[in-house]
Amino acid sequence: MSTTSNPAESLSRSEPEIRTIALADIGAALRAGWADFKAMPTQLPILCLVYPVIGFILARAASGAEWLPLVYPLLAGFAILGPVAAIGIYELSRRRERGEEPSWTAMFSVLQAPALMQMLALAAVLLGLFVLWIAAAQGIYAAVMGHAAPGSLQGMLTEVTSRAQGMTLLLVGNLVGALFALTAFALSVLSFPMLLDRATPLGTAVRTSVRAILKNPWPMLAWGVVVAALLAVGIGTLMVGLAVVLPWLGHATWHLYRRVVV
Image (cartoon, rainbow, N blue to C red; front, side, top):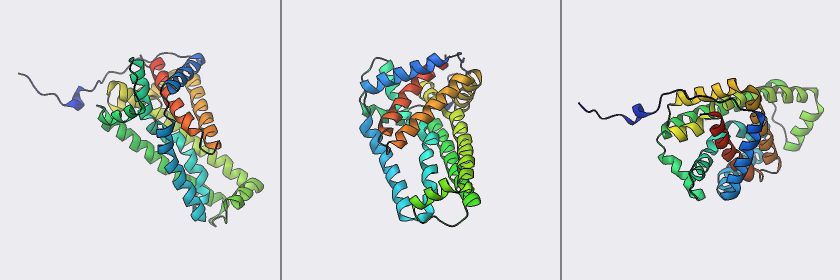
């Protein structure tokens, strides 16, 4: 007797094999990602995606002193939410890999992906981590610097850089932020590309991402450092560099996924 299968039940439940990679694979993924970016420039849609967010953050910081301590944590949150913004970039690399020449509008085809709900669930997890990070950053600032809101951005920077409490704030805040970023990295570094590629269950994708890090700790740590460094450059160039950094990292992540997961 034939039965109608549920699409969710048709998702692959096999645990994929993880390859052992080296630092050379990180460089190769970056070069392949750069080649994809040059072949499919996406600066305009990335700017349209990123700049309203940046504008909101800076506008709030300018209008209310209570937001000033959160400017840096909000910008640092790109390390947590970056994989979500790059989902459409993965799709472009996937299509180019198949010999197609997609335009940037193909980014939106991920809305029809079989594993869309799984990707949305993982995005919600990362958003939750981002919210927790902002709450933690706010709590750390209040505990170290006090509850009084800084009078201006320049005044806050002066206090942070000239007072002993400011050094404590930078040390503790960056350490806690790194833990949040590392958690997001472990959960998502390969999960989104795998969900897009195989429509696998979310648990399998996340386990694969974590297993890849455990099997290749130093290369994957190097990848995390590269991501953090490039994001810092993108933010440090008045966010203009993010128009290049985000798509480049998205394309490179796809190629890293291909090198790590059989």
